[in-house]
Structures are given as C-alpha cells and as structure tokens.
Amino acid sequence: FGTMARLAHGGLRKGVERAAKIFSESIDDKAARFEIKIFPDCEIGELPDDNRIVVIKEAWTDAQVREWLCSLGCYVTLSTSEGFGLCPLHALACATPVIATFATGHAEYLTTEVAWPISYDLVRAEEVYPGNKYYTGYWHYPNEQSAKAAYRKAYSWMYNNQQRDSRNPRKVALDPSHILMQDLLPMQIKCMQQAQKFTYKNTAEGIRRILNDNFGLHL
Image (tube, rainbow, N blue to C red):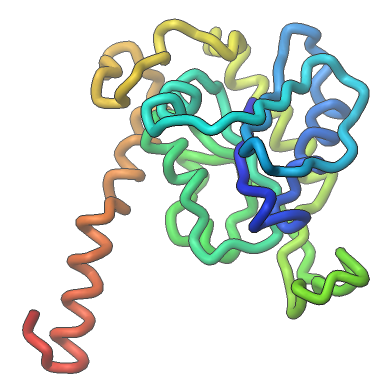
C-alpha cells in the first residue's frame, strides 16, 4: 500500500496519518507495507508504532514517481476534499488500483472497476479540525470502518493475485508504457484504460468545446 501528498499545502486535509493508522489496525500480515511519499520540507503528524510503515521524505523526478506508483499493489487516499485529485489518477495510469471516497474530485474518475470505495460522512471542516482557520465548509470525512473494509478487500485482491510484494518485478517500470499488457490483471488493465480518458489533451479539448459551444469563441 502507498500514499503521497504535499503536506505543506494539504496538511491535515490529506489524511495521511489516518491512512497509516487504519492500515496498521486492519492488515495483520507482517510482510505488508505502507509507504508514505512526502517532500523533504513536509511535517508529518503522529504515526502508529508499526515498522511496516515507511516514510519517504525525498524530492523525486517524474520517472521515480512513476516507478514507485507502478510498484504499489494499491494506492490509498483518505483526503477529505479534493478539487480533482491528481495522485489517484496518476496511480491508475500506472496500473495501480485505488482506495478512496468517491466524492469531490475523485468522483470524476473513480469507479468500482478500478477502486475500492470508502463511505463518508458529510461534516463541517471546523468539527474535524477545530481551530484551523483555513478549513471551512462541509467536507467528506472517510468512515473508519468502511476504510478498514476497503483495505481488507484490497489486501485480499493483492494476496489472491500474488501482488502482496510491494516490489513486484512484473509491475516495476520506469515508464508505464513499458508494462506488458499480458502481465497485468484485468483490474490493472481497467485502471490504465480509465486514466487514458483523463489526459491533459482530453481536458484541454473538453474546455475548448465548452468555450466554443457556450461562448462562441471557436478556438
């Protein structure tokens, strides 16, 4: 399992510490791992006393991020709010399924074919993070029991498909285009196919159509 975030910007909203805690409480396998990729200047909160949880505080190149995402069996996000949420989409592009709420930005591209959904409670941000002046409005707070169930389903999928090793050599690639389709599981193939619908090119084309159709700009 793995997650990544820019905590200097997302902070508590990203739910990184909570994702690690739920992993520690829901997965018993001593060989399982939970990797947290953050930047060198990010400050992370309290984590469980679990040596399976590894924090990576490094600045990586695009190639290193791709290699890491390809190496994961499952990408996890317990973010309470996202404008879009690029990291889970990047994971899908690397043939890695996701655990997340199907809310806010994630709802645009996550489906049960490529992800294990977490139910959520709609709560005021001030109740989740009291005293933080930057967090206001209603947020989608991931339900803990639902998250634990999603972790176990993902673990079962990885175990049954021999994806338990987070460094599975069949998936590690410097470029996702080097992954051989015959080496992938059906869910992994669907992940890549779903990500291809949300490329920057397709996004730009969609914006162009909106401007043409609604504002007559004819770009």
